Length: 505
Ligand SMILES: [Zn+2]
Image (cartoon, rainbow, N blue to C red):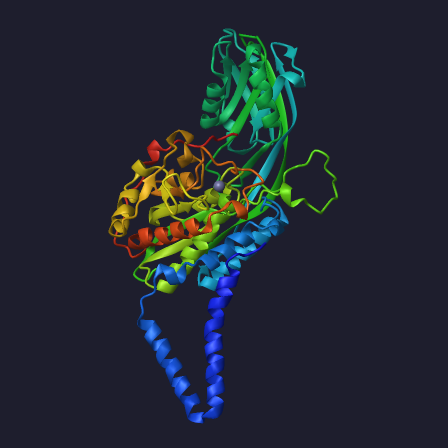
C-alpha cells in the first residue's frame, strides 16, 4: 500500500531533527550554548502547554491515512467475520486505542469484548398434513430451535386443532399457529409478520407463490446466525412452510431438527473516563467487519494466493468509520477535558445481522448513554460537497439540531439523510441502541444512489477522498464537543416508533 502522505509527514518530522543536529554542532563549539539550548527547549515545551490543542493538531491527514490504509489493506483479506483476518483487524484497533490513551473495560482483555454467535442450519424436516406426506422440494423452514415436534389431535369439531409440542428453548410451551397464505395474499408480508411475532408457525403456502418460495427456501437452507443471548429474553421460533393447495387442516405431524455451531467474535471497546459526569456516556462507534473474499467460480480449495482484485477491502465500508473513531478518541484524549465518559466501540458482525452491537447493548445500561454517534462510510464526499456529512433519523431526536448549534459559528452543519427511502436508519448498528431509547444515529457521507463501489471489491483505498474524510472527522469532533463536555443532552428516541427486528430469521 502506498501512502501518498508519508513523505510529507517524514519531511515535517525531519525539520526539528535537523534543527537539533545543527544545535549540537554549535554546542561542540561552545559548552554554554549547549546549556542554553536545553533551557530553550524547556521553555518551548512550557509555551506549547499554553497553546490550546485544536482538531488540526489531533486529527491529521497522515494518521487517518495510515489507519484507513491498514484496515483496508489486502493483508486483512476483507475483514470477514469468523476469520483470522478479523482478529488481526481487532488487534490493530486495540493497539491504536491503547496508543491514543483509552482504557479497556475491566472485564475485557486487551479491549476485546467477546461474545458467541450460533449458526443454526436446518438438518431434517418431515411434514405430514391430513395424512399426506410432503417431499423436501415443497418444504422449507427457518428455526432457532434445534429440535421440535408438533402433533395434532383431531377434536370432534375439527375447526380447532389442538397441538402438543416438543421443542427446545423458550418456545417449548407455545402453541403452533396454522397460517394459510392464499393465492392473493402477500407472502413476504405474511412471513415478515410471523417473523416479528416469533413463536411456532406452520404455513400452508399456495402453489401460486412457488417462485418466491424457492428464494426463501434457498435462503433458509443456508441457516441462521443468532447471538447467544445469556439473558435469553428473545424467544426465537420456528416457521415451517409447506407448498400446497390444502385449505383445511384436520391433522398434522411435523418434526424438525437443526445443527448448531457456536463461534466467538469480538467488539473492540475503549474508554475515556469522564471527569465530572462519569456515569453519563457518549458512544462513538463504527463496524470493523466486512465481506471477506469474493468466492471464485473455479475455487481452488487450498490456494492461499488470493487475487487482490477478489478482496472486499471495505475501505469506505467501514474502515473509514473505524479510522474516524480512533482519531476522535485521540482528539478527546489529548483535549483531556471530557466531563462525560466517552466510549469508543468498533463492532463486529454488522454485515451479518448486527450481533456485535446487539451484544454490546446488553452490557451497558442504555439510559446512561447520552448519545450514540455511529460513523458509517465517511470516506467520500457527500452529495452536499467535500467534507460534508449527513445523519440518519434526524427527526427522531433533537441531537442533529443541537450539533448544528455547535457548528453554526463555523458556518458548518450536519445535513439530514438525503436518501430516506433507503431506510438507512435501520441499516446500521445505531438501530439496536435506538430501540432502547438512545439518541442513536448514523453519520455518513456516502452517495448511496450513485456509488459504484458499495459492497464491491472496488471499495478500496484508491476510491477514497482522504482530505474530505479528514474534514468530516474534524467536523464531528467540533460538533460533538458540547456532548463531551456535558453542556447538551439530546432528547431520547421513542422506542415505540422504532421497528423491531425479526425474532426468527
Ligand atoms: Zn457498513
